[in-house]
Length: 273
Ligand SMILES: Nc1ncnc2c1ncn2[C@@H]1O[C@H](COP(=O)(O)OP(=O)(O)OP(=O)(O)O)[C@@H](O)[C@H]1O
Image (tube, rainbow, N blue to C red):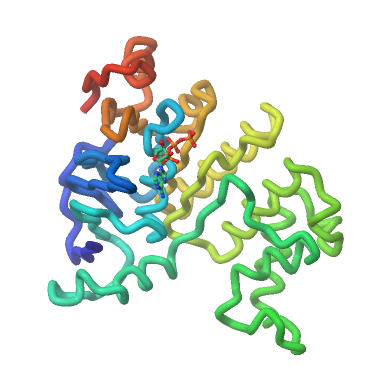
């Protein structure tokens, strides 16, 4: 299902000169006889912040989980254009292709996905689990320790690096989850409600930090957000889902009240580019 395309193909209108890093075409996901994603086609560009919005149950998390390989589509295709994999057409449908994409991908999960009895630092270090067995008695490599410490500093928690995660608040845990996602310097960063446990000013500040990182380092950033004001503030591009269909796909500037209503109404009504 995953296709590496050596030359970027502009298959969907993206802001400015952007070309897609990742795109999906006619994506369908069916679970238990129910269609969760219906013919979803869109694209995500490097250095561009795409925010996915929509009512509860619209399929936002499912779309994100297709992009990080956790959910296998029942139909349609996923194309990776810009992850340095020199794959030919023959290898495009292999699990190796997904593994190559995953090497460059990090996800900030809604439930944080942390281990409570481990310290904040050890949780962030799990981002480097392939470089050392988590139960190994030997220290983590220096590059991993430095990257993990920097990521904790970036979210303002370096002074609590050795505290157990079970002693942190929900918002602090969310920041540790963000640090773990950032530690490896991903080229595709996916966030499923990454700021839901944070107060508004902190959500906005961390959101702007992620946005600055995406623009500076050319990271493909895809966020699922419930807070529409925050979505407008952070997004270059908004993808609106309703009942598994794309009902809005366009620049954040044209996501006006009418467009918002079309996404959150029960009768999908396509608008945008
Ligand atoms: N494995 C599954 N089996 C059956 N139904 C599923 C499965 N996973 C998700 N669903 C259903 O698919 C629909 C979309 O789920 P999804 O989590 O993608 O929506 P969402 O837009 O992220 O919702 P929310 O904003 O509430 O998190 C929901 O109705 C959910 O119950």
